[in-house]
Length: 145
Image (cartoon, rainbow, N blue to C red; front, top):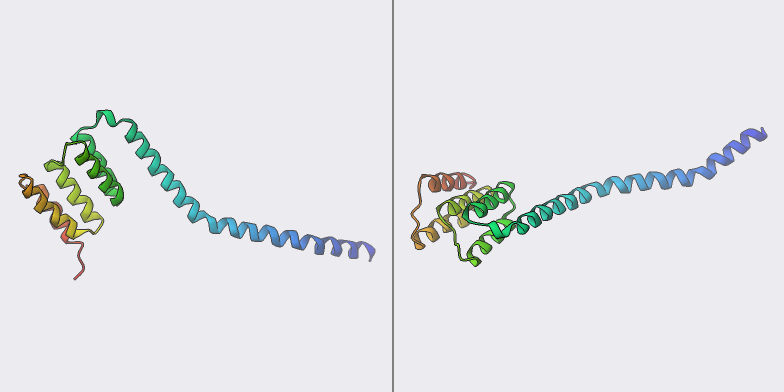
C-alpha cells in the first residue's frame, strides 16, 4: 500500500504541472492567428523594402506592376501609397496606371473611387479605353443591390 500511496502523491504533485502545460498549450494555440497576421505584415514590409531599394529604376511600368500586385491582394493602402509616389515623382498616372487602379479599387469594393478615377482620367486628358470600361464594369458588379 505504501507504494500505491507514494504513486498517488506523485500524481497529485504532477497535476499542477500538467494543468500549467495545458494552459500554455491553449494560450500558444490562441496566439497563432496573431502570429500569422504579424508574419504577413512582415512579409509585406519586406516586399516593400525590396521595391524601395530598386526605386532608382522606377518608371510607369514598374509602378503599374506594383499597383497591380498590391491591388490583386486587396492592399489598397499600399496602392494609394504607390499612386502618391507616382505623382510626387512627377510621372503621374498614364492610361495603364488608371486602368490598373480602377481594377484595384474594384477588387477592394471601392466602386465610387473607381468611377472617380474615370473622371480624373478625362480631366487629365487621358481617354478611357476598352480595358478601362471592362475594369469599371467589373467594379460595378461588386455592388449589392
